[in-house]
Length: 287
Image (cartoon, rainbow, N blue to C red; front, top):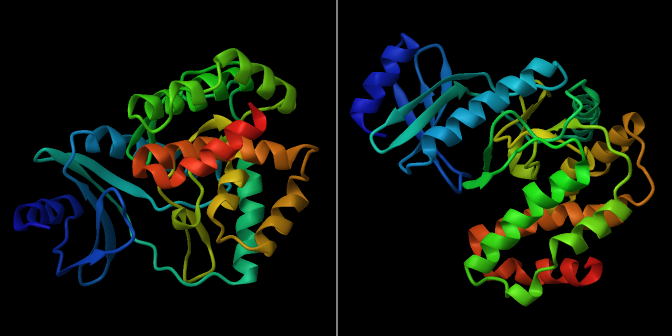
């Protein structure tokens, strides 16, 4: 982080930053811990053109999650352009390794988020990002239509355009609509984190769960749960506590495959062919 930006952050924060420490874990942006004499802050910096809309969407998402009162997120302070990219400045959360009680609390709070009252439509007022990829949130009244048109089709088209999937490997929109209509229950919208893998939550030193790096929209709550199961890292106490509030519906396991397909396609488009076998397995099994 250069001196010019540090001076600008001093002005924004009305304090003097004494120490800047790089943090690990970000695949897309550089992350830093900023320390003054009395406070700590978190800053992400990205030099790409898409950084400003990406960070603005993240700030809006954090506010939307906080507004539900169901679960905590770091408070976002500022998003600004910087050189060719942008930065986002927010609260720094001191975190610890989660125990079973922490994860049970997380499960209950996520369920309360999914129960929070939202508009009776799927999507969002603005598009955002999944990782560094654009995520369309065009609103629909029907969940199947939203999921096929705004989630599966854009990622399948992107994979075909990049030569990661053959055109003959991609099912038709009509086929996907028929399969998903048959497998999806009558769904009410829930506000979703949208990218809930184990790197996108923190447990504070006080045992409070925090959601980070959201890709929110209104959708079927099972999507968040499907993502938690894709790469692991949540544990039995989390799922038991979640199910006490949100009991599972018949057919959840099969829908988990279809909901994980979206995230596997995202990873295919971001990181390449190592994710192709998993994508092809689900496409062959259901379409």
